[in-house]
Image (cartoon, rainbow, N blue to C red; front, side, top):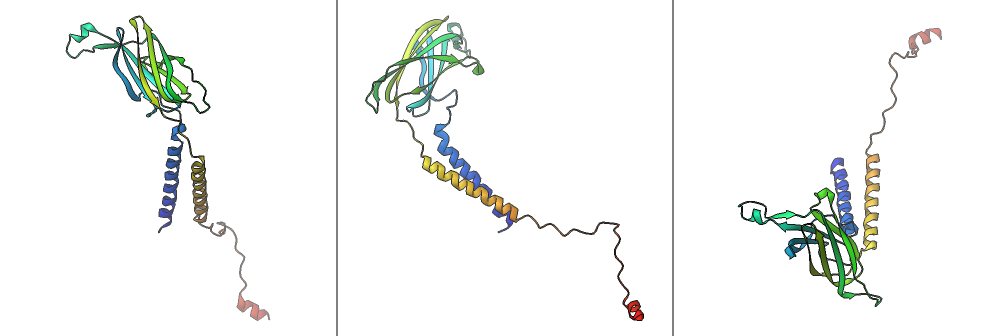
Length: 222
């Protein structure tokens, strides 16, 4: 096997190891904003309509993410073919109440309901509202959404089951990190071993060479 092929094989192993390490750490990374699993789709809330998405899927105790969109039906547009029949509500007070219905608490303590204000997302044109929180326990939760806007007020809700928090196998992560360090060190040693030995220093151009003695002249002198 040529030197280039061996080096490429080592680099490929390092890349694969990094990918596996990121896969192990992925549950601990921050949740991405926007999108998720649909929980409400065109759900009536008074004169409004509500859309809701959750992350992660499945929901787990720990960091959870809720994305909401609020619209109002456009009765005039509904009579026009191809027209947008719903207009987004971009200015509203959106409150989300998390109520435990049947949760699992390790220490036997009680989990109280809590309320969050969903914040509009300017980067998404204020069309979406988001609420991030740390869910304190696994089990069945009721998510109530109350909206107050110039287009009207309304409320709706849904229930969702939260699984126990995901745990990270730190022993496996440490082992994978050690293997990566060894592979990186081997690549460094291999690269240094393949470097060519510097050639001997050559005579500088124009340098005067010492004249060699004539053997015949030396014989005559003797």
